[in-house]
Image (cartoon, rainbow, N blue to C red; front, side, top):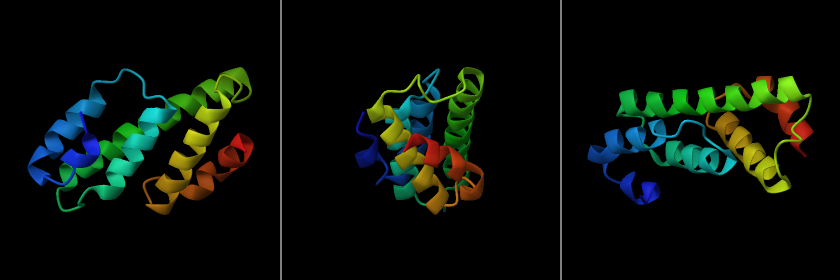
Length: 110
């Protein structure tokens, strides 16, 4: 599924939300795709826009909970750390996440 292409058609937003809901767990690569998709979406279709924000917040929370349990981001590869950092920064810039709350984690990913 080419989500970035689908996002151009507002009538397909429901399909995009369903696509991301199908994942049991979103990895760093999927988080990048998700935040890039959120950036491209129109906020006019608020229900779907908000649903994607909630999916992202839940996925980030799950990753941070694992980090708390394990004491570090050692369970992520260097590539995944870069992807997570990108997703966190972009989510902060888009006001999807409160950057001040996640900045410390981002510094740890560097």
